Amino acid sequence: MLSELSIRGIALIDEAHLRLGPGLTVFTGETGAGKSILLDAIGLLLGGRASAELVRKGADSGRVEALFHLSDVVRPRVLERLSKWGIEAEEDLLISREVHAGGRSVCRINGHMATVQMLRELGSLLVQQHGQHEYHGLLQAEEQMRALDLYGNHQSLLAEVGQLYAEWSQLRRTLERMRMDEQERVRRIDMLRFQMEEIERVNPRPGEEEVLREQRRLLQHVDRVSASLQTAVAALMGGDRISSGAVALMAEAAREVAAAADFDPRMKDAAELLETAQVHAEEAAHAVRRFLDRLEADPAELERVEERLAQIRALERKYGATEADVLAYLQGIREEYNRLVNHEQETAELEARLADCERRLADACDRLHERRRETARRMAAEVQALLRTLSMPSARFEIAVNRQTTRSGTGFGADGADQVQFLFSANKGEELKPLQKVASGGELSRTLLAMKAALADVDEVDTLIFDEIDAGVSGQATLAIAEQMTRLAGRHQVLCVTHAAPIAAAAAEHFEIVKVETETHTLTQVSPLDQEGRIRELARLIGAGAADETAVAHARALLDRRVQS
Image (cartoon, rainbow, N blue to C red; front, side, top):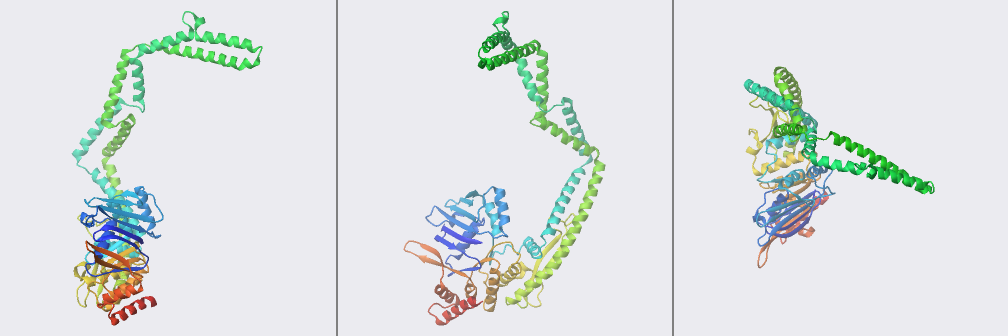
């Protein structure tokens, strides 16, 4: 839930810090006091559009920051997103957004830089915002289907359908590629055959290029290498005077030290080391001499190595950066070549696999369709019963679940093969029509509330925000809305901007939004109300004021009713 909200330099709000609790929290104030600014600020945190106009006049920037306490339902999905983005998870979630006077904004999640899209993704998991004129959610077909599936707990069946649809789609795409034009298939076979023959003719081996480079380097500098090795042999063996070579000198040193060791055993180790060094030096001399005997300038071999390197590099320019890449490419085109050559057999196998997958997908879609139809009856009955409690006794609410078809005739999708539509009629005898086309503002407010109440036990969002859900509603209907809001607040944190005294009185917390004019500028202030402050504000909402004893008594009665309930 949203536990803390800080706003600085946004529109008319200079500075505001709100501590919010669970249950129902309301915000009230005179028309024009700036209630919409509060919602705009929250909207910024949810990835809404940032504008330089939001920055308070005279300020360089405005900032909104929110601390969310994550419930057990929301936490796994939030942590999944944070892990994907490489953001360290903490006990709570801190989101901030700073808007500069030039229009640029900076987003942060737990102190890490973030994008607006990341805020939108998190916002959809944390908060649902509903306004009188912006019911973007439950009036959209995809959201209506999501709500129905959520109500009916169809998640496992939806996952099965989604997996089968992904498999079916992949098979269709593969089969479409296989069913290419025959001339194109022949051209492709010819090209693949040419490429295979070109690579196989050279027949590169992994690591060969590096070996060839070493050979070329030696062949290019054979005279220099030969001279160095001859000098080394002479130094080791002594040339014409063998006794002057390093091997002979070490042998003489070893004999002399061994003789000394006859008188002092402590020299024995030194003698053995010299003997070993002399043996190693002699072996090294023989190894160098053998290499030197085989070493000779060979222009033909150098030319062969250069030509081989050129062949390998030519392949790498076409088919991969290394010999291994070229060989991997060869393996891939061999497989494609075999598929194209065995086109008819593989096509038949793919068609059989596609038919089997389509049968399983159709069966899963049928089961999901029946589940949705049964769930639609239960959900519609519950929503209609709730509408009666909201002073809409003649209202009818139904959920249509119909098979959808596409130009391909399949109608399959990742979420099944259905179209879901919420239908509504406010008055007796009126035809059921799509909800968004027939409901007035007040009717839509109550219908939305009824649907949210029906989804209260399964909805996966912690915080619900309602902006003037009481618009167009009065009297007993307002009391009924207050009652349902209270029930909804038992499952969610509910934040509500309202003009209705019964709804304001039902809240656990009440904030007043007022516009204050100073000598130089105008400010919007957001303040929590104590008991007396609530009575005063409720009296104003009733239509009188703190001086009207009847209104004050009515306000006290409304608050007492909340305490008693």
